[in-house]
Length: 254
Image (cartoon, rainbow, N blue to C red; front, side, top):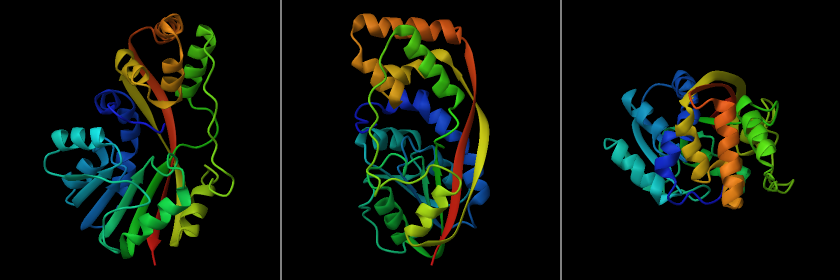
């Protein structure tokens, strides 16, 4: 997704809750407290969790709507509109730099990692999470079935050029961090159950978030109604429990 304008409230009720599943794993891997940056903070979930753990946190996001929401939700944390790979901070400012589901969204992942390394202090820690490329997640399987039942055509993929892309695997993510100038990179798969009311999740789709949201926005009125009907049939309109898996990697600034 490239345009997050006016999506923060819907994102907070839907996909932000999915992305929050990594928070305990990030906190487990974070070193002792100090200055921390949450790059691509979204609605500020990771930044707030770090602040509650004693970190002096700053969060940045490219979308001003996300920054607005994060400031309102977490008034004790500083949030600024900024994006990778051009962060408005001096080199070595942070003891911990986190990018939760960010480098898999930016057009230049390697440049993003170089910038994450630049703003991290020597000996500081960088923590990055991404979605794996395989196997297909239960959530994506749900969206594929919704589109199939509704006769909706999924939007065309926007693959990065080979020179900019990286393998979304437990081996590929550490390699990306190493290429960006970090050392001692290591990764692991983590899993959790994403539990959410079906109506809340659908709000993210209506806002155009994720691939399924892009597909929904591309339909005419009849197509959108068909997608909603398919979703209601598959979800039962109740509470969804969707097993989720991500890759988390840690690395150190030289």
